[in-house]
Length: 472
Image (tube, rainbow, N blue to C red; front, side):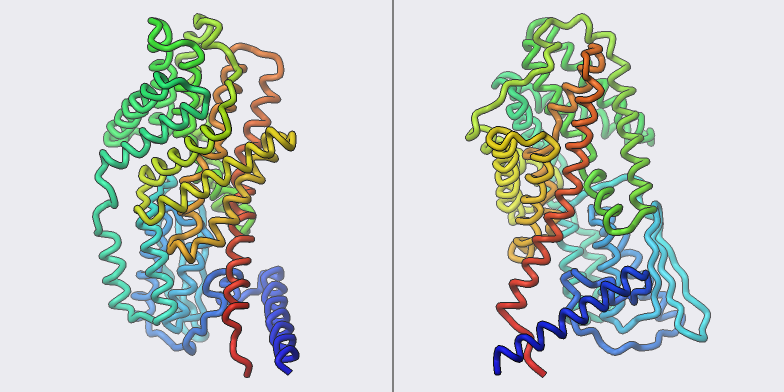
């Protein structure tokens, strides 16, 4: 009898899930259907209630603030939509329409027979990240959905999160980036001397970028200046013999990795897969602008390249021992977690994700003869799988676990450096190599999305088996 009940319950859930998927495919989904395959898909929300214009405006205003803060902290577009739907459903609001475009979040409350209440919030044009704030904001969303926290209490909690000081002082955060630069230099076959100088070059370019940003200079030119400074600084260390050519190559490759907009790459892929095409298009423009700015920075000092010695002009980097690759990937993830504002509880999970990803990539490239894009995609998918499955236990979003580990484990920074250098030196096959490097970068986004979805879905199924719903 017990087995029959389990079968009946499983069939009922499968039928309901299929019905929701059918509505989603037909683009005729209710807002609650948008919570399918999210942590809130099985939450029992209160009955729908009617809101007058003033009360509806208050709820929409809070939802817009929450969505904008999530975006600024580095949340994905789908997570922003999920948070808004879950919060408004917890307060009994339906007849709500949500549109997240490339630069704004639009909300409309339109109950039948009444004038709609429409509000919008402008989103930042640049991706940013604050992992501690992201964790706190998603925790507030879960608390509202689970306890139906009153609106005034929720607004107060949001105020406290927004006004709270940064997790770390600025100098400590920048120090985390310096540690990451040093570890990435080692991963790019750098010596101890190069690994000690890489953080100094990072600090110079980081502070120059901060000063330029304070003047209101467009981010395009800030990126171009950073890349030009990296190139010029490296050449200045090579010409007098402070660094050998190979050491300079590893130092430059490490700092190039730190400039890559990996959050934009991952978010772009997520948006394209999840159907947020306006956001994907906007991020594509941002990514193209970054690459153009980086190219401008390289071309500004390209005249220095032909005068370098053969060691500096080499496009080959020496592979590291396996143990050293894993150790530096883990330490790099630690530094990156601090650089992105992550708290102490997040660090062990980010380190574990980075070591796992680095191990899988090494296995694929050295033992299985995989191409770089395939190894990168599979490694990132495994990292995403682990992050999605462990996120509830870690008390942090899967994104906060995954992103810090990507830089040290799978980012093709050395490959990008080599491809750019090959183009400057007119090496045969340079275009093909650059294409493979860009394919590896795209594989990071695909692997991250696939792995996170599988990991989160598997974790929810496992919890459901451990705590089956009572039979009715």
